[in-house]
Image (cartoon, rainbow, N blue to C red; front, side, top):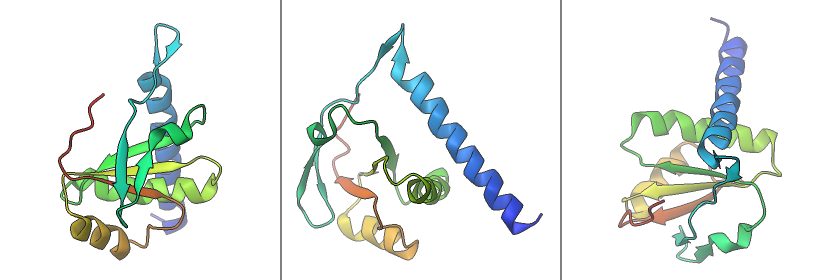
Length: 126
């Protein structure tokens, strides 16, 4: 299969997944469902408060370096973010150290524009 066609299919699949999760994951009985409030640290140790995005649509991706699907999704989310830079992408690492998470994202050149947060105790629940 032609690489350009393959990439287009992956991009469209990511858009469909995002739109599907926004529609099915946030709409219940006609009401929007909010992401639970959280405060997590970025790779530099600075806190990020989800209240900063109150009223703004954004994408949350929860990932881990050991998750095979996450390895594909995070790259797709980076592609979507480049295509739609006005929609913030928050990527929350589950249960790994900053060294492991940062190595994973650095190897894939993913830092541009995405907010990478750490949840080493995997304590945020919806």
